[in-house]
Length: 140
Length: 116
Image (cartoon, rainbow over all chains, first blue to last red; front, top):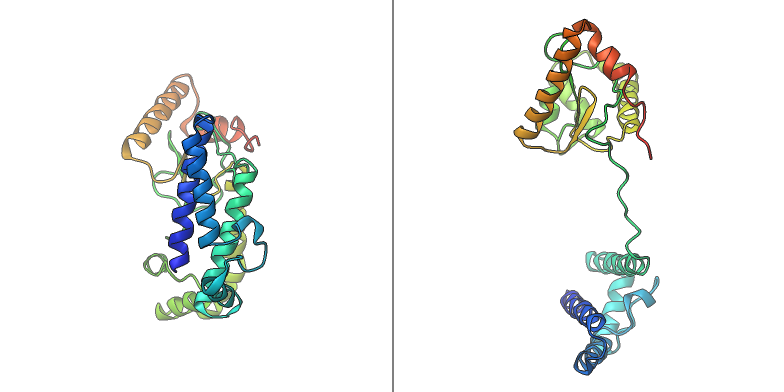
């Protein structure tokens, strides 16, 4: 679980740095910070999630061994680790495709009238009315 | 049964539904026939019809065919109902019968499927 904190913390810092770098690329200080963060991330986590396709992240030393062992275990921790690795890969893929993944399907336009048949659905009120409201619902 | 299903919304499993029906003293043979027959078909048809006009989730409302999705405040419903009521009253004043209004101006003139 410790790895989660480190990975996310470094990830957010990296994103912040990347955004700042884009805004003023000539700023040498920011370049230096980005470089330091990358080095720190490599030291703490090892390989990036995007490069860790289907295998344990490349962390070195004791942390890396524990991480790889957890990934291969069929324990709750192992399942969580595998799930996290999968999510990290998905996030990396999504960011590379410019956020095109997960685009929401089109929704009906509020101004358009749609032909919604009533069939024999359960209803309340008079059979014929000036305003008829159809509700799609589930039991939640 | 309706109230029981609502009260047990965390478990829609077949076994749970059968248990609820049994606890109400329903005719279990009829229950099973309906569950796997007409109820299933009705549900599939309703879902297909709502999906055709773009309602992919619940709750989804169509007020005289106009969409209002999700949990919305009272004011949104009132505004839409008032607007549709005015339109309908104007049509009725021009000679449309109340019993024909939905059929004529929603079912026939409404968009049959969401443009994708």
